[in-house]
Each structure stands twice: as C-alpha cells, then as structure tokens.
Image 1 (cartoon, rainbow, N blue to C red):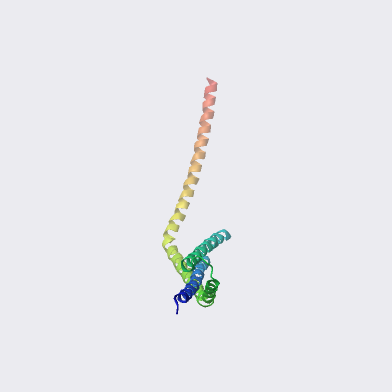
Image 2 (cartoon, rainbow, N blue to C red; image 1 turned 30 degrees about the horizontal axis):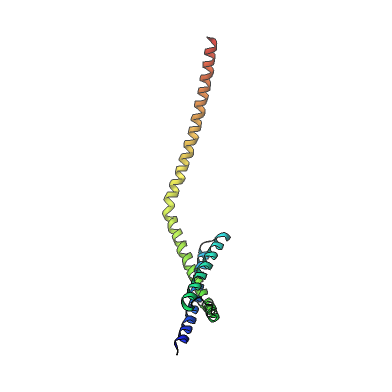
Amino acid sequence: MSSPVISENLFLLYSFGMGIFITFVYDIFRIWRRVCSHSRFWISVEDILFWLFSAISVFYLMHTQSNGTLRWFAVFGALIGMIIYKKTISPLYVKGFSFLLNKIIALLKKILSIIGKPFRLLEKRSRKVGKQAISGSRRAAGLIKKRLTAFVKLLKITVSKH
C-alpha cells in the first residue's frame, strides 16, 4: 500500500480511538454524578469542562494527523467509535464502577461511624455539662443581680438619709 493510504487508514484508526476515549471520559463524569449528587450548576460546569477537553483533543488530533483539515471519514470514525463503546463497554463500566464506589463509600461511612461513636458520646456529654454550666451561671447571675439591686437600694436609702 502507498504511504498516503496508510496514513489515511491510521488517521481513521486514531479518530476511532478518539471517539472511544471521549466517551470513556464522559463515562467518568457519569460515574462521578452517580456517586456524588450534584446541583445543576455543577453539572453544567462539568459539561463545559468536558466539551472544552473534547474540543481540544479533537483539534489536536486533526492538527497532528491532517494538518488541521476536517476529514469527514475521521468524524464518522469517531462517531462509530463512540457508538460501539457506548453500546458494549459503557453500560457495564458505568454500572459496575459506580456500584463498586458506592459500596466503598458506604463501607467507609460505616467505619467512620464506628470510629466516631466515642466522639459523639463525648460531644453529647459535653453539651449536657455545658447546658448545666450555662443554667448555673444564669442562676448565679440572677442571684448577683438581685443582691446588687438590693445593695444599690440600700446605698440610695443610706445616701438619702445623710
């Protein structure tokens, strides 16, 4: 085969791989969204970052392989790569990996819950002691206020008599 035909076939193979790679990266975002809930704002930010990454990757591929010219067979190669990956590997990868990560996170939460139990008990007891201290200090403040009021009254009476 001639060199231009080989380079065109290689470019088609690269575009096919780029389609698989871009879909794989988006699956990482999908897994992340399944594991950690997001607001619409953060989903939009992630999508913008994904599309910027995809555009730069495709531009780099086009620039290095075809001197920046758009070749439609490369677009179709990337599209076919995306479709094949999406129909075969993607469902298993996303479901399996998100399931695994959710189980790991649940296990870590359980471990942290067990480790944190003494600290929660300590916090509960310190709150109780704190409430008692505040209650006692309020009573003491009320008693001091009564005594000071009585002293001020006595002082006024004494001063007015003299």
